[in-house]
Each structure stands twice: as structure tokens, then as C-alpha cells.
Amino acid sequence: MVETLRKLLRARSDGVRRECCSRDVAFAGLIVRTVTDAEEPKKVPTGRDASSPFDEPTEQLSRPVAGRTIPETDDDLNPVPTEQLPVYRPREGEVPRPPSQPTEAYTAYTPPPTAVPPARVETVRTDTAPQVPAYSKRDLDPGLGRGTLDLGLLILRITVGGLFLFHGLQKLTGWWGGPGLDKMPDMVEHLGWKQPQISSVLLMVGEIGGGALLILGLATPLAAGAVLAVIIDAWLVRQAAAPGLQFTAPGGVEYETMLVAASASLILTGPGRIAVDGGRGWATRPYVGSFVVLLIAIAAAACMWIFMHGGNPFI
Image 1: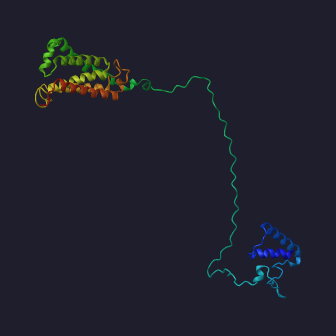
Image 2: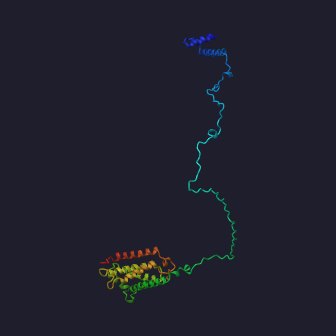
Image 3: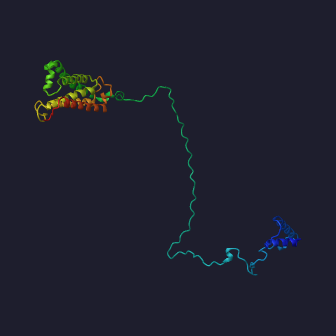
């Protein structure tokens, strides 16, 4: 049967066609493998066939020769030293060195016992009144440090304000030989002003109002600015009366120049403490505001001269 199956398989491999299906061929191959495995005896492994590369060593360690010992320390390797260190010997005439003395033993520093500080004695205040720092009279009253400054400013205000008030009333009422209100426009027109009515009113308001406020010390920066604008235009009118600079000429502008300087000084210094506005900031410590008022007064005088007069004062 086995031979028949083998022939069948061989015929399939040689290309001979047999009338059998692929299922029969596969089944026949399975039977052949089963029968072959049953006929061959199985080998059982034993320990005799096992081998190791260490069973037969290729090199054998050398054995010590009889009569020789194996060195165990450095002295056994070379028991006799090959080099001897030289011994120090002093030269002729050389004093031998004394043997070194041992240094003195160091004694540890022991700090002295600290003294106990005395107990702090604190005094307890029985009164509950607050402590008031000591102030001088000058600190309590700043006016004491100004000396006679306020008195000098008062005299300056009365003098400048009185002069302007006097000339304003003279033009308004005709007192003390003044032109009066009726003749004032003609006088202003004769001096070269284009709008005599308006110019007359502005001139009298500036002199009377500014002068009165300066004397009182009320709104001093504005009052001094008003009289400054008036006196600047008066200086230009006097300067335009004749060609050239009229400062040293008879009837020149010395008087107007002095009033210009005094009015500008009052704007920058303030009225002082002896004034109605003595408690305000501009009375004792004027700052940027006073400088602005000074510039506005100069600009107002220039505009009034350009638009209301228009003449060249230096020709």
C-alpha cells in the first residue's frame, strides 16, 4: 500500500496525469508521513553525548620549582638597598646646628567672664500732655523775618498810586489846572491818538482805578499792570514829540522811565503784608502769575499804541 501511494505521488511530480483529485493526493501524503515516522526509531538524548570546551584545557599552569620560594613582600624582592643616603657632616669652621627645640605648647585663649550690664532704668511719664516742638517766633510768624520790607513796599505803593490818582483826577475833574472831561478828547487828539473819546476813557480809567487800587493794596498785580500800560504809552508819546532819543533832553522821558520801573517792580514784588491783600500769595511770594501779568501789561500798551496811535516814537 505504501509503495502504491509513493508511485502515485511520483507520477504526480513527473507530470503524469492521474484521475484523482487533489484531496486524495493530500490524504496520501499525510499517510506516507505518518507511516515513515512510525518506522524510524526515536533517539533518546543521553548525557554521554554532551561536551564542553573546558574538558580539554589547552594550557597548563607552571608549577614552582623545588627549592625556590615565591616573594610575598617588597623586601623579598630586593632585600639589600642599592643606594645609601649621605650623612650630614659639618664643614671646617662651621658651627654645628643645635638640635631643634620643641615649640612651646599653645595655650588656648580663655575669654574673661563678661560683666553683667546694669539694669536699664526707664522713667515713665505720668503726664499725658503732647510734646510740642520748640519753635522760634520767626517760625510762628513769617512776617517777623521780612524786616522793613513791607513798610518800604507800602511807601512805594502810596507814591506811585498817588501820582497816577492825582493825574487821573486832574484829567477827569479839571482840578489843579487839569483839562477836565470836556477838553480831554481835544488834548488826546492833539497828541496824535486816532480815537480821542475811547483813548481818553482808557487813560482816565487806568490812572484813577490803578492808582487807587495801588494805594489800598487791592488786586495789586492787576492795578500795577494797568498803570504800567498807561505810563508806557505816555513814555512813547513824550518820545515821539521830537526826533531822536529824548531821555536826556529838557522835558525828556526820565520821569516816565522811573514810573515804568516802579510799576513793573510792584508787579513782581507784590504789595507786601501791609495791604488789603496782605494775606494772599502774591502779597509776599509772587511767582509765575506776576510775570504773566507783566507780559500782558506790556502787550496791552503795545497794541494800544499800534492800533490807536500808530506813530514811530524814534523818528
